[in-house]
Image 1 (cartoon, rainbow, N blue to C red):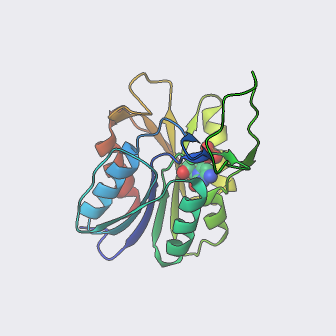
Image 2 (image 1 turned 30 degrees about the vertical axis):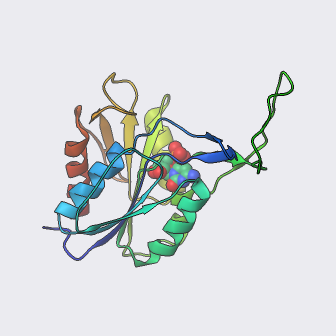
Length: 212
Ligand code: C5P
């Protein structure tokens, strides 16, 4: 019970960015990794505020409060209102980088052969909250890279003012989106620790150990 008394913010799942009332831009994140971390932290005695994008997952633990959101902007607003009261924040969500600039209030009709949707950048939740991180707060982020994995992840650790970044490898065929297993490397300013392929539950326990 070594996270006893700690309050955690965990983001999980994808975000859906509305194009019109029936369509959205999303991604293949299932939320499994974030939910596994939320469970492992709650089992260690922490109180968890789980800010979740749309997923098919259920979670029920007396120490977990789930806050459901849809878009990156909603996720940012929920996190910004909670963050100051949290000891540890774990940014596991696959937030859409861009969102439609002018979502339509009515269903878009099929007309021309081509359709252009103008997109604008979403706020980077981990980077924004990294700017207001206090000395006693710990931030953990995730990175999913397809090339130059280590330098890219280390760059994000720096830019987003994270204490740890968990690099997901897409090189292993059983790791990443949708799988129950993951192959990660835990990176801090001082250390790079590659872990073997393991279940997302075991990865979650390794992450919890960092936080004791
Ligand atoms: O920049 P990239 O999306 O690769 O960074 C991944 C990390 O940043 C993850 O921890 C993710 O949850 C977080 N992130 C975020 N808000 C965004 C984009 C990424 O919190 N808009």
